[in-house]
Amino acid sequence: MGKSVPKMGGSMKLLWTNPNPGAASFAEQRIDLDLSPYDLLIVTAASDTTYAQTYGGYSVSFGQVGKTNALTALGNYITRRSYVADNSGISFKGAVAVSTYGSQQSNNAVCIPIEIYGVIL
Image 1 (cartoon, one colour):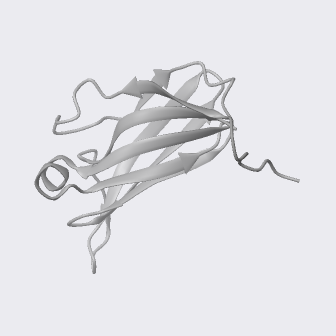
Image 2: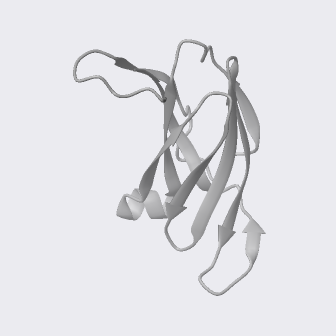
Image 3: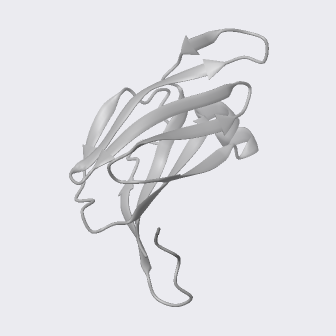
């Protein structure tokens, strides 16, 4: 049986903030963090730097340590960036963008991680 969210208790802590959230791109990279105490992760992301700054295109992803997770966002494109979290950090993969009737294209200027939170239930 899985864990349930208690009525009282638990905690959430900001673990990382993107030092340059307005950058034109976020390359595939690893961010070293101690994730061993956390049950869940919350990652906020901008759909892309232009759309997010103009229209507030942000999304929230709930992820698990030990799993492959995904950031998704809607803007001018449907965007996706997967990430793998383990006890010592998060590895963000390259992002892709898909136009409504188009093909998938690599695009690291989309689904840009902004903040990472650790959650203890």
